[in-house]
Image (tube, rainbow over all chains, first blue to last red; front, side, top):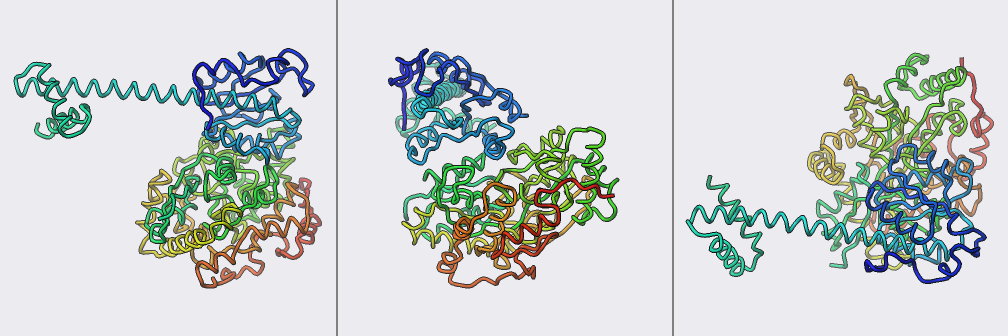
Length: 223
Length: 395
Protein backbone atom coordinates (compact mmCIF):
# COMPACT_ATOMS: atom_id res chain seq x y z
CA UNK A 1 0.00 0.00 0.00
CA UNK A 2 1.33 3.38 -0.94
CA UNK A 3 1.05 6.09 1.65
CA UNK A 4 1.98 9.71 1.38
CA UNK A 5 2.43 12.57 3.82
CA UNK A 6 0.99 15.94 2.91
CA UNK A 7 4.53 17.15 2.33
CA UNK A 8 4.98 14.54 -0.39
CA UNK A 9 2.22 16.02 -2.44
CA UNK A 10 4.17 18.78 -4.04
CA UNK A 11 6.75 16.50 -5.51
CA UNK A 12 6.68 13.53 -7.79
CA UNK A 13 8.89 10.57 -7.25
CA UNK A 14 12.58 11.29 -7.47
CA UNK A 15 13.83 9.88 -10.68
CA UNK A 16 15.06 10.93 -14.07
CA UNK A 17 12.10 13.29 -14.50
CA UNK A 18 13.33 16.42 -12.64
CA UNK A 19 16.53 16.45 -14.64
CA UNK A 20 14.79 15.85 -17.92
CA UNK A 21 11.78 18.06 -17.23
CA UNK A 22 11.54 20.61 -19.95
CA UNK A 23 14.13 18.74 -21.91
CA UNK A 24 13.84 15.87 -24.29
CA UNK A 25 12.76 12.66 -22.53
CA UNK A 26 13.54 9.13 -23.67
CA UNK A 27 10.08 8.90 -25.22
CA UNK A 28 10.95 11.64 -27.63
CA UNK A 29 8.26 13.90 -26.18
CA UNK A 30 8.36 16.66 -23.61
CA UNK A 31 6.37 15.94 -20.45
CA UNK A 32 4.78 19.32 -20.86
CA UNK A 33 3.30 18.11 -24.13
CA UNK A 34 1.76 14.97 -22.61
CA UNK A 35 -1.99 15.38 -22.75
CA UNK A 36 -3.70 14.00 -19.65
CA UNK A 37 -7.47 13.62 -19.25
CA UNK A 38 -8.99 13.23 -15.78
CA UNK A 39 -12.43 11.61 -15.66
CA UNK A 40 -13.75 12.18 -12.15
CA UNK A 41 -17.19 13.05 -10.85
CA UNK A 42 -15.65 14.44 -7.67
CA UNK A 43 -14.64 18.00 -8.57
CA UNK A 44 -12.53 18.37 -5.42
CA UNK A 45 -10.45 15.29 -6.08
CA UNK A 46 -10.10 16.15 -9.76
CA UNK A 47 -8.81 19.59 -8.75
CA UNK A 48 -6.30 18.10 -6.30
CA UNK A 49 -5.10 15.74 -9.01
CA UNK A 50 -4.90 18.45 -11.64
CA UNK A 51 -2.90 20.75 -9.36
CA UNK A 52 -0.46 17.97 -8.59
CA UNK A 53 0.04 17.15 -12.24
CA UNK A 54 0.57 20.80 -13.15
CA UNK A 55 3.08 21.27 -10.33
CA UNK A 56 4.93 18.25 -11.66
CA UNK A 57 5.23 19.95 -15.00
CA UNK A 58 2.35 18.44 -16.95
CA UNK A 59 0.76 21.47 -18.55
CA UNK A 60 -1.94 19.85 -20.65
CA UNK A 61 -4.39 18.52 -18.10
CA UNK A 62 -8.09 18.44 -18.85
CA UNK A 63 -10.93 17.49 -16.51
CA UNK A 64 -14.06 15.71 -17.71
CA UNK A 65 -16.78 15.77 -15.08
CA UNK A 66 -19.78 14.48 -16.95
CA UNK A 67 -20.03 11.10 -18.55
CA UNK A 68 -22.46 11.88 -21.35
CA UNK A 69 -20.68 11.46 -24.68
CA UNK A 70 -17.53 10.47 -22.84
CA UNK A 71 -15.97 8.74 -25.84
CA UNK A 72 -16.67 11.68 -28.14
CA UNK A 73 -15.08 14.09 -25.68
CA UNK A 74 -12.05 11.87 -25.25
CA UNK A 75 -11.80 11.53 -29.00
CA UNK A 76 -11.82 15.31 -29.36
CA UNK A 77 -9.14 15.69 -26.68
CA UNK A 78 -7.03 12.82 -28.01
CA UNK A 79 -5.12 12.42 -24.72
CA UNK A 80 -1.99 10.36 -24.12
CA UNK A 81 -3.11 9.34 -20.65
CA UNK A 82 -6.61 8.97 -19.21
CA UNK A 83 -7.02 8.82 -15.44
CA UNK A 84 -10.32 7.61 -14.09
CA UNK A 85 -11.79 7.05 -10.66
CA UNK A 86 -12.13 3.33 -10.04
CA UNK A 87 -15.54 3.88 -8.51
CA UNK A 88 -16.87 5.40 -11.72
CA UNK A 89 -19.14 3.07 -13.70
CA UNK A 90 -17.92 4.92 -16.79
CA UNK A 91 -14.80 2.77 -16.79
CA UNK A 92 -16.72 0.25 -18.87
CA UNK A 93 -17.31 2.92 -21.51
CA UNK A 94 -13.55 3.39 -21.84
CA UNK A 95 -13.16 -0.33 -22.44
CA UNK A 96 -15.03 0.16 -25.69
CA UNK A 97 -12.07 2.15 -26.99
CA UNK A 98 -10.07 -1.06 -27.25
CA UNK A 99 -12.63 -2.15 -29.79
CA UNK A 100 -12.76 1.13 -31.66
CA UNK A 101 -9.27 2.04 -32.70
CA UNK A 102 -10.69 3.70 -35.78
CA UNK A 103 -12.63 6.09 -33.55
CA UNK A 104 -9.85 6.83 -31.10
CA UNK A 105 -6.82 7.58 -33.22
CA UNK A 106 -4.31 5.48 -31.34
CA UNK A 107 -4.76 2.17 -29.57
CA UNK A 108 -5.10 2.51 -25.84
CA UNK A 109 -4.10 0.05 -23.18
CA UNK A 110 -4.71 0.12 -19.49
CA UNK A 111 -1.56 0.44 -17.46
CA UNK A 112 -1.44 -3.16 -16.37
CA UNK A 113 1.67 -4.71 -17.63
CA UNK A 114 1.85 -8.44 -16.94
CA UNK A 115 5.05 -7.74 -14.97
CA UNK A 116 3.75 -4.80 -13.03
CA UNK A 117 0.91 -6.08 -10.89
CA UNK A 118 2.36 -4.51 -7.71
CA UNK A 119 2.13 -1.06 -9.22
CA UNK A 120 -1.40 -1.56 -10.51
CA UNK A 121 -2.49 -3.11 -7.22
CA UNK A 122 -1.31 0.03 -5.41
CA UNK A 123 -3.33 2.07 -7.88
CA UNK A 124 -6.43 -0.09 -7.43
CA UNK A 125 -6.07 0.12 -3.64
CA UNK A 126 -5.97 3.89 -3.91
CA UNK A 127 -8.98 3.87 -6.26
CA UNK A 128 -7.40 5.14 -9.45
CA UNK A 129 -6.99 3.51 -12.81
CA UNK A 130 -5.03 4.82 -15.73
CA UNK A 131 -5.33 4.20 -19.45
CA UNK A 132 -2.33 5.14 -21.50
CA UNK A 133 -1.62 5.31 -25.16
CA UNK A 134 0.74 2.58 -26.25
CA UNK A 135 4.33 3.62 -26.80
CA UNK A 136 4.77 5.83 -23.75
CA UNK A 137 7.83 5.03 -21.72
CA UNK A 138 6.97 3.08 -18.64
CA UNK A 139 9.11 5.19 -16.29
CA UNK A 140 7.16 8.29 -17.18
CA UNK A 141 3.84 6.58 -16.80
CA UNK A 142 4.97 5.25 -13.43
CA UNK A 143 5.74 8.76 -12.22
CA UNK A 144 2.27 9.93 -13.26
CA UNK A 145 0.66 6.95 -11.61
CA UNK A 146 2.66 7.39 -8.39
CA UNK A 147 1.58 10.97 -8.23
CA UNK A 148 -2.06 10.00 -8.75
CA UNK A 149 -1.87 7.36 -6.06
CA UNK A 150 -0.49 9.79 -3.50
CA UNK A 151 -3.08 12.40 -4.47
CA UNK A 152 -5.94 9.89 -4.28
CA UNK A 153 -4.69 8.75 -0.85
CA UNK A 154 -4.40 12.37 0.29
CA UNK A 155 -7.97 12.96 -0.84
CA UNK A 156 -9.17 9.86 1.01
CA UNK A 157 -7.43 11.14 4.17
CA UNK A 158 -9.02 14.56 3.78
CA UNK A 159 -12.40 12.89 3.40
CA UNK A 160 -11.80 10.77 6.50
CA UNK A 161 -10.76 13.84 8.53
CA UNK A 162 -13.84 15.67 7.33
CA UNK A 163 -16.04 12.75 8.38
CA UNK A 164 -14.37 12.65 11.81
CA UNK A 165 -14.87 16.38 12.23
CA UNK A 166 -18.52 16.04 11.23
CA UNK A 167 -18.93 13.18 13.70
CA UNK A 168 -17.39 15.26 16.48
CA UNK A 169 -19.78 18.11 15.74
CA UNK A 170 -22.74 15.70 15.86
CA UNK A 171 -21.49 14.31 19.19
CA UNK A 172 -21.22 17.83 20.56
CA UNK A 173 -24.82 18.56 19.63
CA UNK A 174 -26.10 15.32 21.18
CA UNK A 175 -24.19 15.96 24.42
CA UNK A 176 -25.49 19.53 24.62
CA UNK A 177 -29.08 18.37 24.19
CA UNK A 178 -28.64 15.59 26.79
CA UNK A 179 -27.16 18.10 29.24
CA UNK A 180 -30.23 20.27 28.74
CA UNK A 181 -32.55 17.34 29.45
CA UNK A 182 -30.67 16.39 32.61
CA UNK A 183 -30.49 19.99 33.86
CA UNK A 184 -34.24 20.37 33.50
CA UNK A 185 -35.20 16.95 34.89
CA UNK A 186 -32.81 16.90 37.84
CA UNK A 187 -32.61 20.65 38.44
CA UNK A 188 -28.79 20.61 38.25
CA UNK A 189 -26.20 22.89 36.69
CA UNK A 190 -24.58 22.37 33.32
CA UNK A 191 -21.30 21.29 34.95
CA UNK A 192 -23.13 18.77 37.10
CA UNK A 193 -25.02 17.43 34.08
CA UNK A 194 -21.80 16.96 32.15
CA UNK A 195 -20.10 15.33 35.16
CA UNK A 196 -23.01 12.91 35.44
CA UNK A 197 -22.77 11.96 31.77
CA UNK A 198 -19.02 11.49 32.07
CA UNK A 199 -19.25 9.40 35.23
CA UNK A 200 -21.90 7.14 33.70
CA UNK A 201 -19.84 6.76 30.54
CA UNK A 202 -16.80 5.74 32.58
CA UNK A 203 -18.80 3.27 34.66
CA UNK A 204 -20.32 1.65 31.59
CA UNK A 205 -17.13 1.88 29.57
CA UNK A 206 -18.86 3.82 26.80
CA UNK A 207 -18.36 7.12 25.03
CA UNK A 208 -20.04 10.20 26.52
CA UNK A 209 -21.88 10.74 23.23
CA UNK A 210 -23.35 7.22 23.43
CA UNK A 211 -24.66 7.85 26.96
CA UNK A 212 -26.01 11.23 25.83
CA UNK A 213 -27.79 9.50 22.93
CA UNK A 214 -29.35 6.97 25.36
CA UNK A 215 -30.62 9.86 27.50
CA UNK A 216 -32.22 11.45 24.44
CA UNK A 217 -33.73 8.15 23.28
CA UNK A 218 -35.14 7.42 26.74
CA UNK A 219 -36.58 10.94 26.96
CA UNK A 220 -38.21 10.51 23.58
CA UNK A 221 -39.79 7.21 24.68
CA UNK A 222 -41.05 8.65 27.98
CA UNK A 223 -42.76 11.58 26.30
CA UNK B 1 -13.59 -21.68 9.15
CA UNK B 2 -11.12 -20.69 6.49
CA UNK B 3 -10.09 -17.09 5.91
CA UNK B 4 -12.85 -14.85 4.57
CA UNK B 5 -13.10 -14.95 0.77
CA UNK B 6 -13.96 -11.73 -1.03
CA UNK B 7 -16.28 -12.29 -3.98
CA UNK B 8 -17.18 -9.48 -6.37
CA UNK B 9 -20.58 -9.00 -7.97
CA UNK B 10 -22.54 -6.45 -9.98
CA UNK B 11 -26.02 -5.70 -8.61
CA UNK B 12 -28.04 -7.67 -11.16
CA UNK B 13 -30.66 -10.34 -10.69
CA UNK B 14 -28.54 -12.98 -12.39
CA UNK B 15 -26.28 -12.88 -9.31
CA UNK B 16 -29.16 -14.61 -7.48
CA UNK B 17 -27.48 -18.00 -6.94
CA UNK B 18 -24.40 -16.30 -5.47
CA UNK B 19 -26.38 -13.92 -3.25
CA UNK B 20 -28.63 -16.72 -1.97
CA UNK B 21 -25.64 -19.01 -1.37
CA UNK B 22 -24.12 -16.42 0.95
CA UNK B 23 -27.18 -14.81 2.53
CA UNK B 24 -29.22 -17.98 3.10
CA UNK B 25 -26.37 -19.84 4.77
CA UNK B 26 -25.30 -22.30 2.04
CA UNK B 27 -21.69 -21.15 2.04
CA UNK B 28 -21.57 -21.12 5.85
CA UNK B 29 -22.86 -24.70 5.82
CA UNK B 30 -19.77 -25.59 3.77
CA UNK B 31 -17.57 -23.91 6.38
CA UNK B 32 -16.87 -20.93 4.14
CA UNK B 33 -16.74 -17.34 5.23
CA UNK B 34 -17.63 -15.00 2.37
CA UNK B 35 -17.69 -11.26 1.94
CA UNK B 36 -19.76 -10.22 -1.08
CA UNK B 37 -18.38 -7.01 -2.57
CA UNK B 38 -20.70 -4.90 -4.72
CA UNK B 39 -18.92 -3.40 -7.72
CA UNK B 40 -19.72 -0.59 -10.14
CA UNK B 41 -18.18 -1.80 -13.39
CA UNK B 42 -17.28 -5.02 -15.18
CA UNK B 43 -13.78 -3.63 -15.68
CA UNK B 44 -13.39 -3.40 -11.92
CA UNK B 45 -14.69 -6.93 -11.35
CA UNK B 46 -12.30 -8.29 -13.98
CA UNK B 47 -9.28 -6.34 -12.73
CA UNK B 48 -9.84 -7.15 -9.06
CA UNK B 49 -10.29 -10.82 -9.90
CA UNK B 50 -7.17 -10.77 -12.08
CA UNK B 51 -5.11 -9.07 -9.38
CA UNK B 52 -6.25 -11.46 -6.68
CA UNK B 53 -8.19 -8.83 -4.73
CA UNK B 54 -11.22 -11.08 -5.26
CA UNK B 55 -11.04 -14.85 -4.82
CA UNK B 56 -13.96 -15.22 -7.22
CA UNK B 57 -16.54 -13.15 -9.05
CA UNK B 58 -19.92 -12.96 -10.75
CA UNK B 59 -18.73 -12.35 -14.31
CA UNK B 60 -19.98 -11.94 -17.87
CA UNK B 61 -19.14 -15.29 -19.48
CA UNK B 62 -17.51 -13.64 -22.55
CA UNK B 63 -15.20 -11.66 -20.21
CA UNK B 64 -13.98 -14.92 -18.63
CA UNK B 65 -13.09 -16.16 -22.10
CA UNK B 66 -11.59 -12.85 -23.31
CA UNK B 67 -9.43 -12.68 -20.18
CA UNK B 68 -8.20 -16.25 -20.74
CA UNK B 69 -7.39 -15.41 -24.37
CA UNK B 70 -5.76 -12.09 -23.48
CA UNK B 71 -7.93 -10.08 -25.86
CA UNK B 72 -9.01 -6.55 -24.99
CA UNK B 73 -6.88 -6.68 -21.90
CA UNK B 74 -4.17 -8.50 -19.98
CA UNK B 75 -4.16 -12.29 -20.28
CA UNK B 76 -5.13 -13.98 -17.03
CA UNK B 77 -6.46 -17.54 -17.29
CA UNK B 78 -9.90 -17.79 -15.70
CA UNK B 79 -12.02 -20.86 -15.05
CA UNK B 80 -15.77 -21.17 -14.63
CA UNK B 81 -16.91 -24.28 -12.73
CA UNK B 82 -20.50 -23.04 -12.27
CA UNK B 83 -23.02 -21.09 -14.38
CA UNK B 84 -24.82 -18.46 -12.33
CA UNK B 85 -27.50 -17.92 -14.95
CA UNK B 86 -28.68 -18.65 -18.48
CA UNK B 87 -30.32 -15.89 -20.54
CA UNK B 88 -31.88 -13.06 -18.51
CA UNK B 89 -31.36 -10.17 -20.95
CA UNK B 90 -33.92 -8.19 -22.87
CA UNK B 91 -33.93 -5.67 -25.70
CA UNK B 92 -35.82 -2.51 -24.78
CA UNK B 93 -36.66 0.32 -27.18
CA UNK B 94 -37.85 3.89 -26.64
CA UNK B 95 -41.57 4.60 -27.24
CA UNK B 96 -40.55 6.62 -30.31
CA UNK B 97 -38.57 3.78 -31.88
CA UNK B 98 -41.33 1.36 -30.89
CA UNK B 99 -43.83 3.47 -32.81
CA UNK B 100 -41.52 3.58 -35.84
CA UNK B 101 -41.04 -0.20 -35.72
CA UNK B 102 -44.79 -0.77 -35.37
CA UNK B 103 -45.36 1.41 -38.39
CA UNK B 104 -42.91 -0.63 -40.45
CA UNK B 105 -43.87 -4.08 -39.15
CA UNK B 106 -45.34 -6.66 -41.55
CA UNK B 107 -46.56 -8.89 -38.73
CA UNK B 108 -46.32 -9.49 -34.99
CA UNK B 109 -43.39 -7.47 -33.61
CA UNK B 110 -42.82 -10.00 -30.84
CA UNK B 111 -41.43 -12.31 -33.54
CA UNK B 112 -37.75 -11.36 -34.02
CA UNK B 113 -38.04 -12.26 -37.71
CA UNK B 114 -40.65 -9.53 -38.03
CA UNK B 115 -38.88 -7.00 -35.81
CA UNK B 116 -35.57 -7.35 -37.65
CA UNK B 117 -37.27 -6.55 -40.97
CA UNK B 118 -38.98 -3.56 -39.36
CA UNK B 119 -35.63 -2.41 -37.97
CA UNK B 120 -33.96 -2.71 -41.37
CA UNK B 121 -36.70 -0.55 -42.90
CA UNK B 122 -36.44 2.09 -40.17
CA UNK B 123 -32.65 2.18 -40.50
CA UNK B 124 -32.69 2.53 -44.30
CA UNK B 125 -35.45 5.10 -44.18
CA UNK B 126 -33.44 7.20 -41.68
CA UNK B 127 -30.38 6.86 -43.89
CA UNK B 128 -32.38 7.98 -46.95
CA UNK B 129 -33.46 11.20 -45.25
CA UNK B 130 -30.01 11.83 -43.75
CA UNK B 131 -31.10 11.39 -40.12
CA UNK B 132 -28.68 10.49 -37.35
CA UNK B 133 -28.16 6.72 -37.11
CA UNK B 134 -29.96 4.89 -34.30
CA UNK B 135 -27.91 4.40 -31.12
CA UNK B 136 -27.95 1.10 -29.21
CA UNK B 137 -26.65 0.71 -25.66
CA UNK B 138 -25.04 -2.45 -24.33
CA UNK B 139 -23.02 -3.21 -21.23
CA UNK B 140 -19.58 -4.34 -22.36
CA UNK B 141 -17.67 -5.16 -25.56
CA UNK B 142 -17.41 -8.79 -24.39
CA UNK B 143 -21.01 -9.53 -23.47
CA UNK B 144 -24.06 -11.33 -24.78
CA UNK B 145 -25.77 -7.93 -24.73
CA UNK B 146 -23.39 -6.81 -27.46
CA UNK B 147 -23.59 -10.13 -29.34
CA UNK B 148 -27.38 -10.51 -29.13
CA UNK B 149 -28.03 -7.00 -30.47
CA UNK B 150 -25.55 -7.63 -33.28
CA UNK B 151 -26.97 -11.08 -34.06
CA UNK B 152 -30.49 -9.75 -34.25
CA UNK B 153 -29.82 -6.73 -36.44
CA UNK B 154 -27.32 -8.53 -38.70
CA UNK B 155 -29.92 -11.23 -39.37
CA UNK B 156 -32.02 -8.46 -40.87
CA UNK B 157 -29.15 -7.10 -42.94
CA UNK B 158 -28.30 -4.15 -40.70
CA UNK B 159 -24.55 -3.72 -40.21
CA UNK B 160 -24.01 -3.08 -36.49
CA UNK B 161 -20.77 -1.24 -37.19
CA UNK B 162 -21.81 0.89 -40.16
CA UNK B 163 -25.56 1.40 -40.08
CA UNK B 164 -26.11 2.12 -36.39
CA UNK B 165 -24.08 3.17 -33.35
CA UNK B 166 -23.38 0.67 -30.59
CA UNK B 167 -22.20 2.20 -27.33
CA UNK B 168 -21.16 0.75 -24.01
CA UNK B 169 -23.21 2.06 -21.09
CA UNK B 170 -23.01 0.99 -17.46
CA UNK B 171 -26.34 -0.69 -16.53
CA UNK B 172 -27.30 2.03 -14.00
CA UNK B 173 -27.08 4.62 -16.84
CA UNK B 174 -29.25 2.67 -19.30
CA UNK B 175 -32.68 3.85 -18.20
CA UNK B 176 -31.64 7.49 -17.93
CA UNK B 177 -29.99 7.36 -21.36
CA UNK B 178 -33.14 5.95 -22.94
CA UNK B 179 -35.26 8.63 -21.25
CA UNK B 180 -32.99 11.44 -22.41
CA UNK B 181 -32.79 10.10 -25.96
CA UNK B 182 -29.04 9.41 -25.85
CA UNK B 183 -29.89 5.88 -26.91
CA UNK B 184 -32.89 4.56 -28.84
CA UNK B 185 -32.60 0.99 -27.64
CA UNK B 186 -30.59 -1.07 -25.19
CA UNK B 187 -29.87 -4.66 -24.31
CA UNK B 188 -29.24 -5.29 -20.62
CA UNK B 189 -30.06 -7.76 -17.83
CA UNK B 190 -32.70 -7.58 -15.12
CA UNK B 191 -33.93 -5.43 -13.45
CA UNK B 192 -33.11 -2.54 -15.81
CA UNK B 193 -35.55 -3.38 -18.63
CA UNK B 194 -38.44 -3.63 -16.19
CA UNK B 195 -37.47 -0.32 -14.59
CA UNK B 196 -37.65 1.40 -17.99
CA UNK B 197 -41.09 -0.10 -18.64
CA UNK B 198 -42.36 0.88 -15.17
CA UNK B 199 -41.21 4.46 -15.76
CA UNK B 200 -43.15 4.50 -19.03
CA UNK B 201 -40.07 5.24 -21.12
CA UNK B 202 -39.41 1.86 -22.69
CA UNK B 203 -41.01 -1.14 -24.42
CA UNK B 204 -39.41 -4.54 -23.99
CA UNK B 205 -39.20 -5.68 -27.59
CA UNK B 206 -37.56 -9.08 -27.06
CA UNK B 207 -36.43 -11.29 -24.26
CA UNK B 208 -32.87 -12.48 -24.85
CA UNK B 209 -34.19 -16.05 -24.97
CA UNK B 210 -36.17 -15.14 -28.09
CA UNK B 211 -32.89 -14.34 -29.86
CA UNK B 212 -31.11 -17.45 -28.55
CA UNK B 213 -33.03 -19.83 -26.34
CA UNK B 214 -30.06 -20.92 -24.25
CA UNK B 215 -26.86 -18.92 -23.65
CA UNK B 216 -24.65 -18.86 -20.57
CA UNK B 217 -24.96 -15.29 -19.38
CA UNK B 218 -22.99 -15.09 -16.12
CA UNK B 219 -20.47 -17.49 -14.68
CA UNK B 220 -18.88 -17.97 -11.29
CA UNK B 221 -15.30 -17.12 -12.22
CA UNK B 222 -12.01 -17.86 -10.48
CA UNK B 223 -8.39 -17.40 -11.44
CA UNK B 224 -7.14 -20.73 -12.78
CA UNK B 225 -4.02 -20.59 -10.64
CA UNK B 226 -5.88 -19.83 -7.41
CA UNK B 227 -8.41 -22.57 -8.16
CA UNK B 228 -5.68 -25.14 -8.77
CA UNK B 229 -4.10 -24.22 -5.43
CA UNK B 230 -7.41 -24.44 -3.53
CA UNK B 231 -9.32 -27.42 -4.98
CA UNK B 232 -11.18 -28.13 -1.72
CA UNK B 233 -12.43 -24.57 -1.44
CA UNK B 234 -13.53 -24.53 -5.08
CA UNK B 235 -15.52 -27.75 -4.58
CA UNK B 236 -17.14 -26.34 -1.42
CA UNK B 237 -18.07 -23.14 -3.28
CA UNK B 238 -19.62 -25.12 -6.15
CA UNK B 239 -21.62 -27.31 -3.72
CA UNK B 240 -22.90 -24.20 -1.90
CA UNK B 241 -23.88 -22.56 -5.20
CA UNK B 242 -25.59 -25.75 -6.44
CA UNK B 243 -27.60 -26.02 -3.22
CA UNK B 244 -28.51 -22.33 -3.51
CA UNK B 245 -29.57 -22.76 -7.16
CA UNK B 246 -31.87 -25.66 -6.17
CA UNK B 247 -33.30 -23.49 -3.38
CA UNK B 248 -33.93 -20.66 -5.88
CA UNK B 249 -35.82 -22.94 -8.25
CA UNK B 250 -38.22 -24.22 -5.57
CA UNK B 251 -41.36 -22.08 -6.05
CA UNK B 252 -42.00 -22.20 -2.29
CA UNK B 253 -38.91 -20.07 -1.75
CA UNK B 254 -39.77 -17.37 -4.31
CA UNK B 255 -40.64 -14.69 -1.75
CA UNK B 256 -37.64 -15.38 0.47
CA UNK B 257 -35.30 -15.42 -2.52
CA UNK B 258 -36.77 -12.26 -4.05
CA UNK B 259 -36.49 -10.33 -0.80
CA UNK B 260 -32.95 -11.51 -0.20
CA UNK B 261 -31.79 -10.58 -3.73
CA UNK B 262 -33.72 -7.28 -3.66
CA UNK B 263 -31.77 -6.20 -0.57
CA UNK B 264 -28.41 -6.81 -2.23
CA UNK B 265 -29.37 -5.37 -5.61
CA UNK B 266 -31.22 -2.40 -4.15
CA UNK B 267 -34.59 -2.75 -5.90
CA UNK B 268 -38.13 -3.74 -4.92
CA UNK B 269 -38.59 -7.47 -4.50
CA UNK B 270 -41.42 -7.41 -7.05
CA UNK B 271 -38.91 -6.65 -9.79
CA UNK B 272 -36.80 -9.64 -8.75
CA UNK B 273 -39.87 -11.87 -8.75
CA UNK B 274 -40.76 -10.82 -12.30
CA UNK B 275 -37.30 -11.78 -13.56
CA UNK B 276 -37.20 -15.09 -11.70
CA UNK B 277 -40.65 -16.16 -12.92
CA UNK B 278 -40.16 -14.81 -16.45
CA UNK B 279 -43.43 -12.92 -16.08
CA UNK B 280 -42.56 -9.44 -17.32
CA UNK B 281 -44.53 -6.31 -17.95
CA UNK B 282 -43.32 -5.35 -21.43
CA UNK B 283 -45.12 -2.10 -22.20
CA UNK B 284 -46.10 1.02 -20.27
CA UNK B 285 -49.78 0.14 -20.88
CA UNK B 286 -49.33 -2.93 -18.67
CA UNK B 287 -49.08 -5.68 -21.31
CA UNK B 288 -47.35 -8.74 -19.89
CA UNK B 289 -45.39 -11.52 -21.55
CA UNK B 290 -44.29 -14.76 -19.93
CA UNK B 291 -41.41 -17.01 -20.85
CA UNK B 292 -40.04 -19.52 -18.40
CA UNK B 293 -36.68 -19.39 -20.19
CA UNK B 294 -36.31 -15.64 -19.50
CA UNK B 295 -33.76 -16.27 -16.73
CA UNK B 296 -32.79 -19.83 -15.79
CA UNK B 297 -30.83 -20.25 -12.57
CA UNK B 298 -30.73 -23.87 -11.48
CA UNK B 299 -33.24 -25.93 -13.39
CA UNK B 300 -32.72 -28.00 -16.55
CA UNK B 301 -29.00 -28.42 -15.94
CA UNK B 302 -28.49 -24.67 -16.25
CA UNK B 303 -25.70 -24.50 -13.69
CA UNK B 304 -23.42 -27.07 -15.33
CA UNK B 305 -20.79 -25.45 -17.58
CA UNK B 306 -21.19 -26.48 -21.21
CA UNK B 307 -18.16 -26.19 -23.54
CA UNK B 308 -20.57 -25.78 -26.51
CA UNK B 309 -21.54 -22.46 -24.92
CA UNK B 310 -17.88 -21.45 -24.70
CA UNK B 311 -17.48 -22.29 -28.39
CA UNK B 312 -20.56 -20.19 -29.21
CA UNK B 313 -19.08 -17.21 -27.35
CA UNK B 314 -15.76 -17.65 -29.14
CA UNK B 315 -17.63 -17.79 -32.46
CA UNK B 316 -19.23 -14.40 -31.65
CA UNK B 317 -15.80 -13.00 -30.72
CA UNK B 318 -14.49 -14.11 -34.13
CA UNK B 319 -17.61 -13.04 -36.01
CA UNK B 320 -17.34 -9.48 -34.70
CA UNK B 321 -13.59 -9.34 -35.31
CA UNK B 322 -12.49 -9.13 -31.67
CA UNK B 323 -10.04 -12.00 -32.27
CA UNK B 324 -8.94 -14.14 -35.22
CA UNK B 325 -10.16 -17.70 -35.77
CA UNK B 326 -7.72 -20.28 -34.44
CA UNK B 327 -8.10 -23.83 -33.18
CA UNK B 328 -5.78 -22.97 -30.30
CA UNK B 329 -7.97 -20.04 -29.20
CA UNK B 330 -11.05 -22.26 -29.48
CA UNK B 331 -9.46 -24.91 -27.27
CA UNK B 332 -8.46 -22.24 -24.72
CA UNK B 333 -11.97 -20.78 -24.73
CA UNK B 334 -13.60 -24.17 -24.23
CA UNK B 335 -11.21 -25.03 -21.40
CA UNK B 336 -12.54 -22.02 -19.43
CA UNK B 337 -15.82 -23.87 -18.83
CA UNK B 338 -15.18 -26.69 -16.36
CA UNK B 339 -18.00 -29.27 -16.16
CA UNK B 340 -15.44 -31.67 -14.65
CA UNK B 341 -15.11 -29.50 -11.53
CA UNK B 342 -18.89 -29.14 -11.36
CA UNK B 343 -19.39 -32.91 -11.59
CA UNK B 344 -16.65 -33.64 -9.07
CA UNK B 345 -18.16 -31.24 -6.55
CA UNK B 346 -21.86 -31.93 -7.05
CA UNK B 347 -21.48 -35.61 -7.84
CA UNK B 348 -24.30 -35.82 -10.33
CA UNK B 349 -24.60 -35.48 -14.06
CA UNK B 350 -27.01 -32.75 -14.99
CA UNK B 351 -29.48 -33.35 -17.85
CA UNK B 352 -28.08 -32.10 -21.12
CA UNK B 353 -29.95 -29.92 -23.55
CA UNK B 354 -33.42 -30.32 -22.04
CA UNK B 355 -34.81 -27.41 -24.08
CA UNK B 356 -34.72 -29.52 -27.20
CA UNK B 357 -32.71 -27.01 -29.21
CA UNK B 358 -30.65 -29.39 -31.31
CA UNK B 359 -27.47 -27.34 -31.32
CA UNK B 360 -27.62 -26.32 -27.65
CA UNK B 361 -28.05 -22.63 -28.52
CA UNK B 362 -31.41 -22.34 -30.27
CA UNK B 363 -30.79 -19.13 -32.24
CA UNK B 364 -33.89 -17.79 -33.99
CA UNK B 365 -32.05 -17.34 -37.29
CA UNK B 366 -29.11 -18.69 -39.21
CA UNK B 367 -27.60 -22.12 -39.62
CA UNK B 368 -27.51 -24.51 -36.63
CA UNK B 369 -24.42 -24.02 -34.50
CA UNK B 370 -21.63 -26.57 -34.82
CA UNK B 371 -18.91 -26.19 -32.19
CA UNK B 372 -16.66 -28.48 -34.23
CA UNK B 373 -16.93 -26.26 -37.30
CA UNK B 374 -17.06 -22.62 -36.28
CA UNK B 375 -15.39 -21.42 -39.46
CA UNK B 376 -18.06 -23.19 -41.52
CA UNK B 377 -20.81 -21.76 -39.33
CA UNK B 378 -19.51 -18.22 -39.79
CA UNK B 379 -19.05 -18.72 -43.54
CA UNK B 380 -22.69 -19.76 -43.77
CA UNK B 381 -23.56 -16.41 -42.18
CA UNK B 382 -21.48 -14.54 -44.71
CA UNK B 383 -23.09 -16.38 -47.58
CA UNK B 384 -26.38 -15.20 -46.23
CA UNK B 385 -24.99 -11.70 -46.46
CA UNK B 386 -24.60 -11.12 -42.77
CA UNK B 387 -20.97 -11.79 -41.90
CA UNK B 388 -20.10 -8.24 -42.80
CA UNK B 389 -23.53 -7.41 -44.10
CA UNK B 390 -24.47 -4.49 -46.28
CA UNK B 391 -27.77 -2.86 -45.62
CA UNK B 392 -30.48 -4.57 -47.60
CA UNK B 393 -33.54 -2.71 -48.67
CA UNK B 394 -36.30 -4.95 -47.44
CA UNK B 395 -39.50 -3.78 -48.98
